[in-house]
Length: 555
Image (cartoon, rainbow, N blue to C red; front, side):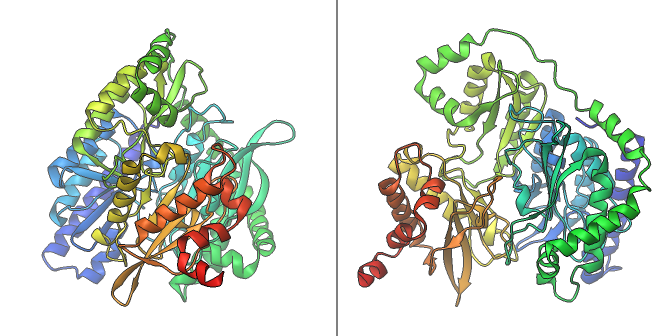
């Protein structure tokens, strides 16, 4: 894990002191809210529906037990005893008082964390595959490159006032677990014909009111060219991006309006101009960063307790089947901790739960944790012999829900319960769906299925790339929920297709039930997933299930 040097420490402390002075001037009236707004946004502070919200960066989703315990302390000391993990691998505190925010930022700095560039028209928190450094299918750990991008983009003088926010995601695996195709820049590690690792580079992805899948701008980019090439992309966007209309200001619209070939030509020209300025200092820095991400000192021990416990404990076996993933070391497993217990708020973790996860990481997980874009927490390195003990501790803390990748493992934005931009609630709908399918005892029978819910057109819940996406809107003062089908956030990314008219809050869960009933009826065997069935049959059988009266009338 990357550790701050003297420059990092001084930089973050200076920013905290600067913001402390700005808060004092806001409180005494020297700054108006309009004057204060851009200053607070530069430090991750939003004004939400009921209170301020502080968004804290967890760069590329990586943290250790000390950081997690500090997040728990902040939740207890200055908030309401919990935090909300987001699809950007951040954590949000929903109830801070303005006067307390500088103290919260100081507490974050104590454990090498901050809230810089978690808002504003800048390059936001760089996100990464939450299995980075552990996955069996990984070409290389992408986090050193993510850290290089973080340092390059932080307070970059040219890119602090972009046309709109800018998001970068990176994965070190051919299998995309970072939704790279739905980002402004998506980086997927691949190998050249000679076997050298480099990146497939995509630009112009994004969700929101005009969802688009990113387009490949380079099939293969050598690692040593990555920083100047990314700078070339952002530089071209900064010059061409729309500033007359914020709804058309994202790079996805720039690519769409100009065409990928034109954008590629402009980027390659700018890259040729910039490449000579990168004389190797970035690669020297990357080499230093890579030393911070050395693999843990994996232990060798018997894995027999794992197999024995699976045979003896059906609940443990069920959890193992859903919440464990293959590790590059065959004696280890990747543990996904679901913070989606049935009926709970997706992404919320209490301070006590944070401390439990910190303790488990320290004792059994080589002191590493990850936050996933799917709003869960990962222990990336757990020896199989320790899994029964880890499971027992998680179960005692209410964290052993066996539902990773299932229908109740729902991504949901905060919606109208918190967000000033939301037009409908997300959290209660997610809770009702999860509770209903737990009652029906169907989710393991259904198998892999990703439901994603957004409370407004901004799509913070990634509904466009959900196998089933739900978008909450306001229709004449009444909440209305549209359904999209067939979305996908992996390497085969696709934007979901709208099924038809929306449903009321009372109708949406029965509609999802009918949808699942149609899938179970039409799938080609228990191994065919919902997405595979949808791709094979198309919209018609699902639309007929959603709108039975219209189907009967048509017949």
